[in-house]
Length: 414
Image (cartoon, rainbow, N blue to C red; front, side):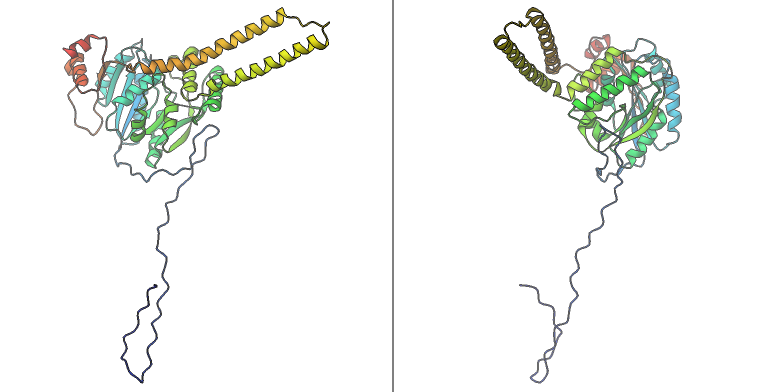
């Protein structure tokens, strides 16, 4: 039953009327605070990720730890100037606790020597050297694997095409709540051939991929520590990191910038490498090529039925007009043979990825791991003082490093 309103206290009497109930104000609806305003960042064009989804109410640390993962391949001419430029840009944010993780991907020049010199000059520099060239994506993965206690990680190349000052704007976007801030190229100082092939690659990838991968982006991006932890769970050998990051999700924002020309040296991405990289992106994130084989097979079967009906009609209704046979059969045989070989090649590409993944081999092996000291942390023993064998042994014992086929690994096992 509904609750009765309270009545005033009265004295009962046969001659006094009963006092009427005191009117009560109408109940008010419960007060709920208004949700915080969310600013929608517009999409950056076809193939870009949605920007209007609000992220969680995150609280960033007052003195964030930011790690830079910097893959290196034959960049000896660029390293000193790049590091000086990056350190100079970071002076605008003295509150950041920074670590630089340089990963030498089996360089053939003096890149490793340059990195070790940088480490002597700047204790925040960590140097990794892969046992052989494994490719850009694996080098970035190795750097992500060794980052410790970083609130955010920035991946960028050392050729100065990605301006170091842009990374500070990425940090600012991250502090506002974004989990991934990727650099999207507004313009690029590349050759016409490189720009055309990049456009074609992203167009095909956008049409075939099952994941929305933003166009005109590279691996220049900032990732929150939660995103880095999720990316570390993806251990496929034929890696396409920008697709992996898009597949992971979280709140992602684009940061438009103008890409500069290389400071020195030549690109580490020749045409053959770019084609293999494009194949990894398509095969790793789409099964459309397999379904296209079935569609093409159905189309050829339907076409063969029509051709057979045409030949039968000519034989029945106009037998005096004989259809040339040898030329037609020869062209058809070569056409079908080429299509069959192409289809087998597509299937073989998928099977090859499955085979490589089923072997369970490590993604990389380290020949050298010299950890630096991020700003704001107590200094650790200098790995260089222990020598390479002692450094490797200590890291192998901690489960941080896998060394194979080197004298240092024998010392570590001994």
